[in-house]
Image (cartoon, rainbow, N blue to C red; front, side, top):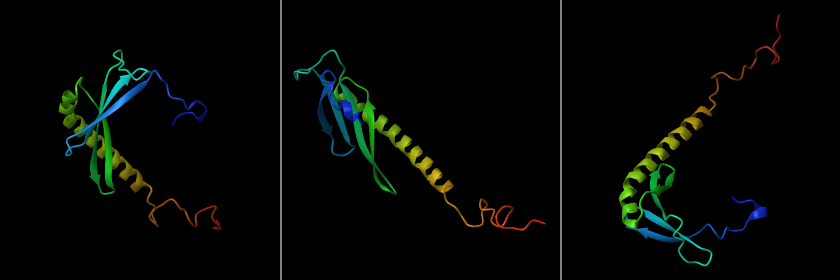
Length: 125
């Protein structure tokens, strides 16, 4: 999120976006650097980003990842490898979240409360 006091776009950092899909695996975004007048900016590199979805028990989870290549064809060839890495990273993140949630479950009778111990209304003799 940008600072509300400086919410202006930088005219020297603009990109034109093109989208490509095979309607099976996902989509590729091609970001073409442009100048403030809308013409192509050959001094900056074109960037490619892949996107796909993986189904989880909680529903579809979007995956986004950078792709290597100088052409859409090269980016498409890199898609499967980068998507596999993104799926593995997402699985690891989901497992970490599952572990964190499991560690927050409080089960009665399993420590922590010290009910009736010193300082909780007990009489010590």
